[in-house]
Length: 410
Ligand code: PLP
Image (cartoon, rainbow, N blue to C red; front, side, top):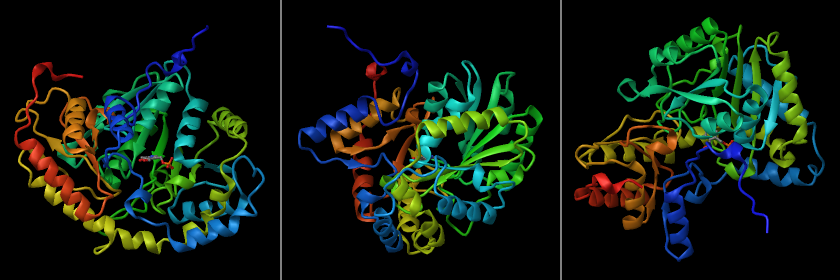
């Protein structure tokens, strides 16, 4: 019989929620073991409920959302997104520049498919949210990673970014607030990124899905607001701020100058039409969701779950000998550093695998985020403090006598 292989287009595409650690977790689950999943930013399994107003809107909308919508999305949804864009000073956006998607994920892939020819380069952060690198690669492009510097609060290293721009570079991806580091970039850094894009004629891609999960009274600045003379493609959605990752509800806005990107927009429109439209019941909640931001605000304020869990995990990680971390300012991730000399770590994926096997706790190794040194891992701090405490104790216990051998690579 003929055999079928995966498309060679996928040969170089790596993704963090695949690989030997996930395979082992799935094997353990199939064998009836219970695993604590600290590896994915999915609030619902940890007891987070969507705001009641959203649930009500979803129920009410179901009966009116049976047909396809306009491929870019319902007018009411795009109007509500436009109001949000205006609140964030994102320039030159009209309803026509807004596309709803089945989560931001679909639109990231679409935006790269529409732009890149084989060999085109895109600057992507390291560590990154790995879908960006995967989408660039799948579109035939080359993801060139610029360093985010832990010693500088995980802000992008602008010199490194500049050094990596070539004649083939088309765009810079900025993930702010950042997954996996939880960093929030100050205006000075954002302005310098915009200057670079201006100098080298690049498109900006701003993944801002965590912009409503910023703590400590800090303010998120939309990258597009600083670049009215450039094209910024901005991404946002309801998976995180409204705790409804399963509804698959995101959007993408083309902001700023568009006269030089008519061909690219034609490509985006074609791809958008090819998927007919995004999930209509989810689109229909956008107006209600963007009016109900109080529940999110409570979660990230003192006394709120995300805030208190952040306080706990940061302190607890810093108290474990051999670990250190930059305090996250947004989202619900922390990206601790592990002293690789002390634990003789040569393979961070093996470290995650060993921890999973011994303690039945799953986190993602730094390499899953295109971080090249074997000295980081990401914890999703969505579980309640009691659960986090158990995980931290297990980690402390595990590290007390953990050492790798040179031969320990997977
Ligand atoms: N962008 C970032 C930075 C993320 O962390 C995630 C999900 O974890 C996404 C995009 C995808 O979100 P969505 O659920 O909207 O597809």
